[in-house]
Image (cartoon, rainbow, N blue to C red):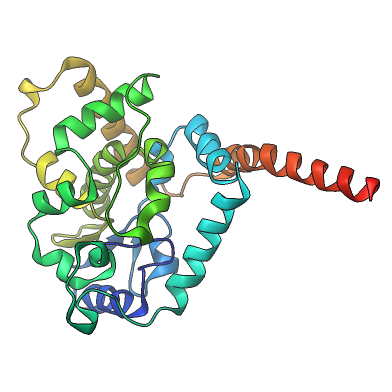
Amino acid sequence: MLHGLTGGTNRQYKALVEDAIENAPGELVFGETKFAKLYRGIQVEMDDWTEIPLRDAFRMQFKAALTPMRMFMVAAGMRRERRTMADRFGANGFRRLQDIGGSAAFHALSPDERRRIAGFPEPYAYLVENCRRRAGGGDRCGPVFPDPDWRWLAMIEPELNIPLRSVFMLEFAVERARVFGGSEISIFVGEIHNSDMVWLAGFDESAVDPKVRDMVDNVRWRAIELARAPRRPSRLRFVLASLAGASIPLSLYFGLGTWLWARG
C-alpha cells in the first residue's frame, strides 16, 4: 500500500486500505511498524524498525532536519495528507502519472510496473544494494517517484533498509503465526515490500551472492527470535539515535536564532 506519512496521501485512499484490512482473510492481520496507529484492524505489529541500524536512524533524522525547507516539506506533507479528501488521479478528466501516488488506480498496474514507476530496481538488485549500503558502500541516491507528494521519500530512502526489512517482516509473520497457531494470515505492508516478499518467498538461494545470503540469514534469525519472544523489543536506543540526529541541526538553528536575537 502507499501509506505515505499518515496512512495515505488522502482520506479516500486511507479508507480503502482500512476497508481491505477489515475484510482481510485469516486469523491474524499483520502490519509493519506504526500501522496499528495509522489504520484500524491491525492485530500484530512487526517491529521492522529493528532492521534499521542506529547509524541509519541517526542519518535519517539528521537529513530530515538539516534545512528548514526539509522540515517544512515533511510537516506540510503530513498536514496535506490529513486534509486532502480524495486523490487527484482522473480529476477534471486528466489521468496523469504524476497524480497516481494516492490513487487505487496505482494498484491496477502490475507489481513490476509499480516498482519501475516509483524508481526502484527489481527485488534482487535492490536487496544487493541494501546489503552494500549496510556494509558502508552502495549508491546513496534515493529513487524519484513522479508524484510530487512523495518527494520526501528520495531524501531518506537510502536509510530505510527496505529489502532487509521485507525479509524480516516475512519471516516474522510466518513464525509468529506458528507461535499463535494460525493457519492463515494477512500481511499489510508498504509498496515495494509487497513485491520484495513475493520474490523472497520463491527465490533460489543457491544463486544468491554468499555475502548477501549470509546477511539475509542473519535477518531471518533475528526475526524468528523476536517472533518467539514474549515481549516486544525496547525502542530506547533507536529513539535516542534518532533524537541525536535531529538535535544537531536543530541546535545549530537554535544557537543562530539566539545569537541573532541577542544582537538585535
